Amino acid sequence: MVWLITSMALWIVAHLYQRVLPTHRAALMDRWGTKRVKITLTLVIAISVILMIIGYLRADTVYLYALPVWVWHVNNVLMLIALFLMEIGRVRGVMRSKIRHPMLVAIILWSIAHLLVNGDLPSVILFGGMGLWAIVQIALINKALGPWHRPDRGKWRNDLKILGVAIILYGVVAGIHYGLGPPVIALLWT
Image 1 (tube, rainbow, N blue to C red):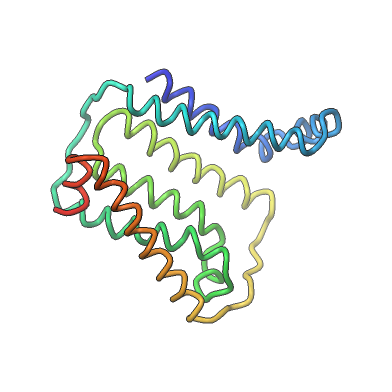
Image 2 (cartoon, helix red, strand yellow):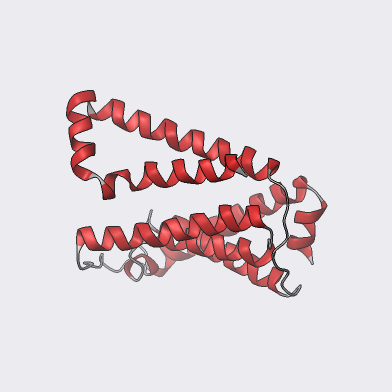
């Protein structure tokens, strides 16, 4: 459990560093150079992801709750929506003009989806932590940037292209989860 908590702390510190300590980051960039600071933060984030995987796999499973089987289907729908939202920031579509932080909203949906089907303590720490981080990140960005100036409305066909990409990605993710074994297969195909 220590690895998992450490990984979440590293992830949060590395991502919130810019928003919470902007003067410290600017001073560090002056001393080290922008490139070295960005490389260091990238390494910290990569290490945190590796520690998340190790920590999650090594953590003792302590079950906290179990939800009905039908929430597995809700999980699948939320995951498809999350994959769609992860991609809409890349194109000028209609949906991009309606959601200010599509990638962070996608992470919140991803975390909720995983909390619906994983009622154990390591999952609550990992997925709950990621969801809370995304909520805090949205609040900090909104505070720093002020009111949102919506981008120009794009075309529906761009959204449909991204939906197609999301469906393909969903298939890839489902295939990877299928390869991970029986507990994950039950979540995907029940």
